[in-house]
Length: 173
Image (cartoon, rainbow, N blue to C red; front, side):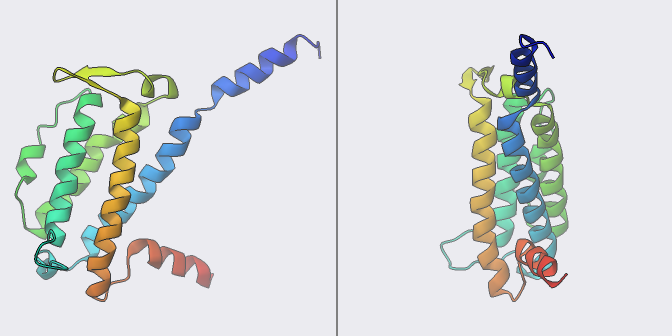
C-alpha cells in the first residue's frame, strides 16, 4: 500500500462512523421498550394509582410522555403531530398505550434519519431556534427519568419492571 493512502483510509473510516447517533439510538430503543412495556404491564385498574397524593397517577405519567414525545419531535419532523390532541387528557389504559406507541412511532423517523452532521445544526421551528442534539439527548434523559418514576409504581403493585425482568431472564440462561 502506498504511504499516502493511509490518511485517506483513516479519514474515510472516521467519516463512516456516527458516534453521536450511535450513542443515542441504542439508549432510545432501550427506554422506548421499557416505557411501552411498563404501560402494557400496569393493570387498567391501576392507571389512576398515585404513589402519594401529590404525584402524578401512573396514567398521567403515560399521558405526559405522549405529549412530550409529540411536542419535542415536532420541530425535527417533516410531518406535523396531528394525532397528539387525541390523547390529551386521556385516562383509559387502551387509549394511553395506543397513544404512547403512536408518539414513539412519530419520533422514530426523527431518530432514524438524524445524522451526526444534522444533529449539530440548529433548526428554526415556531419562531425559535431548536438544537436537535438537545432535543434528542433531552428526550432520552427525560424518558429514563420517567421510567425510573414508573418503576416505583410498578413495584408497589407487585409488578417486576420490564428492564429487571429482562435482566433476570438473561441471568437464568
